[in-house]
Length: 311
Image 1: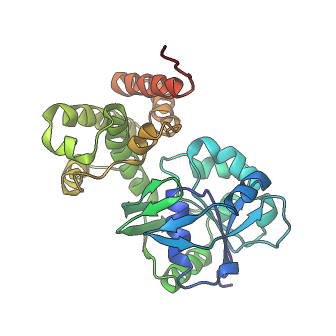
Image 2: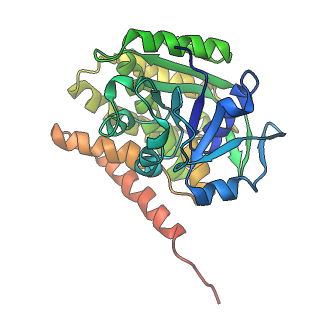
Image 3: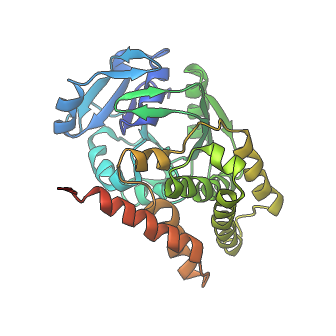
């Protein structure tokens, strides 16, 4: 059964980037965004751009009965995940494949509490450089999708996904140990995403400031310690590779968490340090640096909610 109809939930940088790319190979009716009715009404009167080109997206209400999708892709922020899980219920059938492009290590588990885990293919995205201003997204690279089967997945679904990504010309990798890759990216994000949000800094600061780099490294080492408790299988040299990757990034580029802080949007700190701290408690691992950063970012988010009036 080929994948012909795709539904994306989450109209942020990733959603806009991937939808605009897929529409180069698929028709307008084959790619749709799911949202609640209020957002659908808003989006239908909003101009969306990808690399300066105006996009014509198809929006459907979560309550609409437009038939099931062959593929559901979650691209929402972590704080919106539970609402998104509810909103896709009318668009999922027995053969619908579900992908989560959220960062972190927990979204597939959370989605699997509501929908059949066998249809949720564990995945991650990497290598993209999308930045968003309002509903305009700019990117030079869409990166790649890595995914792999766990013991309860149907190998046929893996083949269906591979065929689909080939058709829409998206780079992909099928990995034998996808959880190891996801944890590696999680550790990277624990370091650079959180440190960049705290410092409101682009990648260049971590390439030139030993103090910024030390903050990032301390965060990374704590996350690595937790991964060792879980026997994820990440080797020390693979952690060293993270620092080398940071050095290759555009010095003017910024992480998504840094962009959130600058835009005064809620961040994904709960998905990063929040989740790590909870796992650490379960395994008696103390995480002082991540605990500090968690509280610091939460304090910044609280400031966004306060309306300061300076006389």
